[in-house]
Length: 488
Image (cartoon, rainbow, N blue to C red; front, side):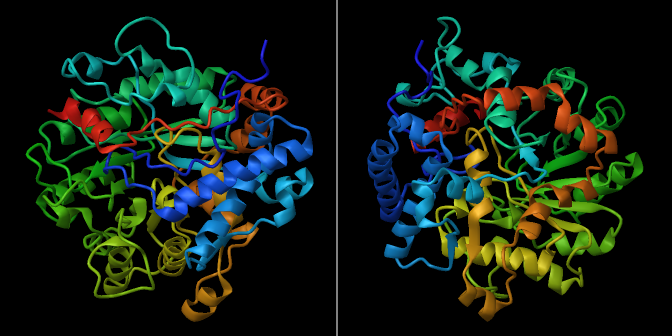
C-alpha cells in the first residue's frame, strides 16, 4: 500500500497560495509575485527533497516543506518590493528539520472562532438547479474517491469525516465555532440542527466540547427574530451571527436602525450577549454602505455590556491596507474611525476577527503588516480573534503556520507604533482572547483537550500524516457563480 493516499507525486504545496474564495466574494487572480512564489517553492522542493533523501511528497508534508514555501514567498515578495512584513524563517530551515520545526510548529491554544461545515446531503442540495455543481473541484485537487455515483457525490469530500480530519488532525486547532453563511433558512447549506449534530460527533469522541455553534439571525428576514428564542434555549448558541449587508430583497440594515436595535435588544434579553457581524468582504455594490463598520462604534458605545465580534474586521478584498487614513470610509480604517469617533477604547467590547482576512493578507505582506498593526493599535492586542473560514480553504494549518512566523517590519513598527509580533501576542490572538466571550470550562482546557480521543488520534495520526493540501471554495468566477446558483 502506498505511503500517501493524497498527491503521491508531491505537486501540491503545504502553503496554499491560490485563488480560492469562501464563496462570499469572487476569486481574486494570483499576481506575478504569487505565481513566482509557487514556482520557486515547487522548484526548491524538488531539489531539497533529493538532498534530504526524501520523495517530494515526503518533503512537502515535513516542517521543511512548510518553511520552504514561506521562504519562497519572502523571496518573491521582496523581489516585488513588498517588505512591510515577512515570514520569520531562517534560510537553513528548508533543509534542517530542527530549525524548521522551531519556526512553524507550536503548542499554543488555538480557538478558531469562524469555521464552516457543509452538509453534502442536506436539504439545500435538493433545491439546486439541475446544472449546479457547487464546490466542484478538478480531479487534480480532489480530496479522494467519492462515495457513490451520483452527480454531486463529490460533495462527500467536505463531509463530516473530512471536516474532522482537516480541522482536528491536520491542523493544530483545538476548538472551533461553526458559523453560517448568509441565506434564507430554506437554502442554508448547514442548518442549526445539522451543526448541532456535527458538534455531537466530535463531542462523542470523548466528551470534550470542541465545537461551539453560532445562531444565524437576519433580523430583516421574516421569522428570524422570533426564532432567536429556540436558538438560545434549545441549541445553546454561543453567539449570534448576522450579515448587515444581506436582506431578502438585497437591502441590508444598520445595527443602530430600527431593525438592528430590535435584534440587539432581543439578544440582551435572551442572555446571549455575543454578536458576530460580517463586516467587509462586501457582496457587491448594492447596500454596500451596510457592509462597512460605520455603525460599530455607535452600538458599542450604546451597549457596553455586549461583545461585538467584527467578522473579517471590515477588510475589503482587492483593496490594499495602508497606514490609518481617517478619510477612507471602508476597510479596516472605517472600523478604526468608528471606534475613535465614538470613544470606544481598545480592549473593551469590540473584537476584530481574522477569518478570510488573514488568508488574503498572506498574499500581501505590506497590507498584512498595516492591517494587523492597526487592529492591535485601535481594537487592542486583547481583542483580535483567530478565525480561518475553513473548511472553505481546506485545513487551516497553513494559515496557522504562516501567522506563527509573520513579522511586521521594524521600519513600520517604528513609524506607526505597531507592536512586534511576539509569541505572547500570537498566543493571545490564536485563542486566549476568545476565552473572554466563549468561556470554556477549566476541565476541558486543562484535561480533555490534552488527553481526549481527538488528542490521542491526532498524536497517532501525526506519526504518518497525509494532509490533502486542497481547498474547497470556488477558485474561478465560473465556479463562484455556480456556487451562487442555489440563491436563485
